[in-house]
Length: 259
Length: 259
DNA sequence: CCCCACCTAT
DNA sequence: ATAGGTGGGG
Image 1 (cartoon, rainbow over the protein chains, first blue to last red):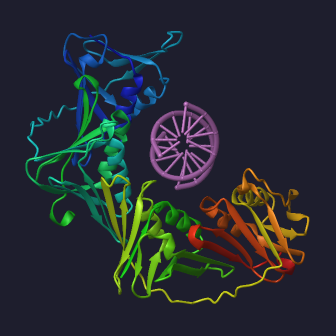
Image 2: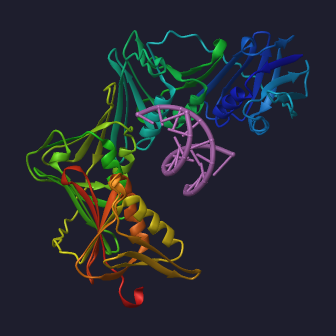
Image 3: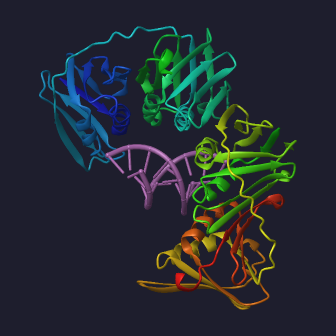
């Protein structure tokens, strides 16, 4: 059986909000190391990979591997029933028909309980190779969100060009063109504002802004976002959570005429 | 070539926000004295006149007269990409295809650059006579905005009646009628709250509230607004900016049955 | 000057 | 239902 208690029901709420527009139904794979989710979006351009490590829960118990096939729209509806400070416990039997969500108010004077029916979902398990990226950019997640939104006013796509000096987001559209260039810099007072560029080789790739804007819904999960690029390889957009948990998005670059 | 650096990108943002609903496309006329704009609204009832003097920029350089024909919707999109404290530099060649806007963050760790394609716009240059007005009312811009909004709940038009004692904004509508009367007064502590009436002859004129409310979008540009009236003559609504720069709106009075 | 919460508008 | 804008508070 699974029993996983999350101090912040809010965390799961934000995670699901950030991915529910990309993926309708997917498996939450539970085992003793935590709860994982991997799914491609309908058009197979983007991939979501979530990992909530057992350490992010307290307590966490999962005796056997269980795949919980969940419709994310249903899950969203139920998660909206949590109040801001609620504590969430996820429960499931070993061969479950339903997943059980329990919300407790911090003062434990209110207890809400929901069962969501599960579905069988074909497991297309995706081995994601751990890549060494040519460029790794760490920056404030709100800034990345802002850049993507701004440039979307001009174009469908953005090119991300990274050199030792900085990273340049650029686009062209009907009304004109635009670019935002960030230099790496440290802010000792507010490390959340740091922009860090770790580069082994210059990179330049083009991506769909629609997807990036979508990924940016996760901005509330982490003050910093990590963009990992290598030529010809999907971009990795990572929001790190506590305890090595994470929410990652992969996006295939546009190539040639697509740009 | 033109190169004009504005410490507050925000200023242009507010100016364009205030006029973009009146005018779609217009020329920004640049010469060594600054950047000017004059345009009538589509229905030729209102006229906008902006003057940003060269002294409002630092530095300001404009070798020749250049007319930059800009679509204000495009310009708005680009100005939205400026962050609050950004410094804006406008650049254009002598016979330009595009105008270039550069936003620098105060800490200059971020630099955004946009090109907007220009268009050819027929210059209907409008000689605006410098009039001696019968009544000049200076009042807090937020108060004028509030009055126009309030009265719009009742009617399409407002009469502005100015005597030595004060100014009365009045309207009649289906649900009833309303009026707001201001007496001139000084507040030594907070001169922004002054209401001043400079009158050579009593005036009473009626105007479309829709337009006035529209003009009031400029309220953020200046704490005070100046209303200049003479019988049979368009109302002048002026927002004074630093360095003798200004944003002015003219509105023809309604006459006879129109009221 | 920044952050948060409310509200409105799509 | 969601996202952006506005207004108020720290």
